[in-house]
Image (cartoon, rainbow, N blue to C red; front, side, top):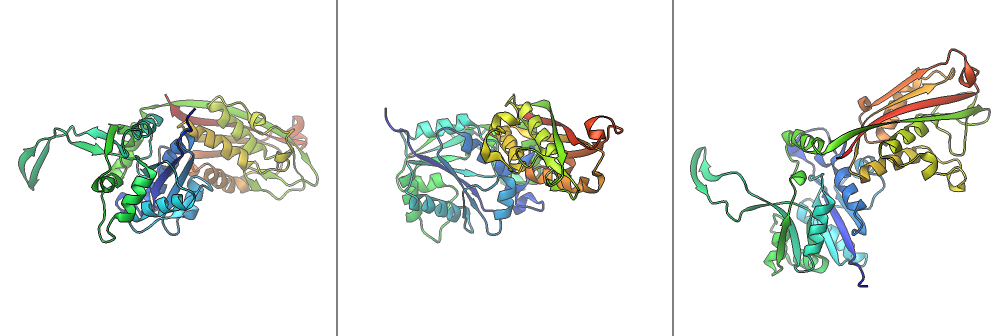
Length: 384
C-alpha cells in the first residue's frame, strides 16, 4: 500500500483586523460561540489526512491564541500575509518539509472536511488547487455613475484554504520579488508555471472582514446547526486537610473536597453535561479514577477536553448553568470569579455562564456539611 502523503496546514492569523472594528483582532473575535480562529483550527486538526496544523500570529498575540485554542503550534508572522506564509513555509522546511500544504485564512472560519478532501485529491494531478464559487451578481464598470456591464462567464470567487505541493509553493515564495506583494499564493505558483486546479468551494467559508460580516456568518452557521441540552451531576466528600476547588477557583475553607483529581465538583458536573450533549459518555469514561495519571489532576483539564470534543464535531457552546449545593462555604462572594474562570476556560463570555447556589435546609449529607453536590445544564449547537 502506498504511503499517505505528509500534509501540513498553515493558518494565517497575524493581522490586526482593523476593518472589522472591535477590541481584538478579528481572528480572535467571537463568532458562532467561539473565537473565529478556533473554528478553522478545529476543522483542520480533526481531519484525518492532515498531520499538523501551524498558526502564524502577530507580535504580542500569543496570549490571545492560548485563550482561543490553547498551547498549539505557532510561529511569528510578518507584516504582510505573504511574509507570514513565507515564514510558515520556511518553518515547515526546517522541520523536514512536507508533501503538501494547505494555506488558510483565519477569517474564513467554517471550513468543511469535504472542501479539504477535494483540494487534497486535486493535487494528484495539479501543482495547486483552490476552492471557488461562481460569480452570480451582475458586474459593471463605473465610478458613481453606472457603466457598462462586464461578462461574468468564467469568473469565479477564490476562497481558502489553497492547497499546494509543498516544494512548488515554497519555491514560488523564494523566487517572488521582495518589493512586490501578491494577492494570494495561487497567483504566485501560476507565475512560475504551476498549474492550479479549481474545485468546488463552499458558501460557508466566505470571508469575515467587516462588522456586518459577523452577523452574516452567525446566520450562515446557525442555519446548519441544531441545539442539544444535557445535564451533569456530581458529589464529593468534604475532608479536613484537602484544598477546596469549586468552579475552577481555590476557596479558603476549613475543609476541602476529596477525590481522585482535585475533586472540583462543579467542573465535574459541567464536564458531564458537555459530554452528554454529544453523547460522549461521562467523565469516568475519559478520565478513569483507576488511572494514576489523573491523581490530583486539575479538573479544568477535563472541562476543556469535553469542550474540545464538541469543537472537533463542529459544535459550539451556547450557555451553561451550574448549581452548587452546600451549607458552607458561601458561594456568593466567589460567584464572579467562578463565572470569569469558567468563561475563560471555555472561550465564552461571562454572560454565557450562570452560577447559582442553594442549600438543602440542613437536610441530608450536604445539610450536615459532609459534602458538596453540583448539578449542571449545558446547551450547545452541533451540525445538523
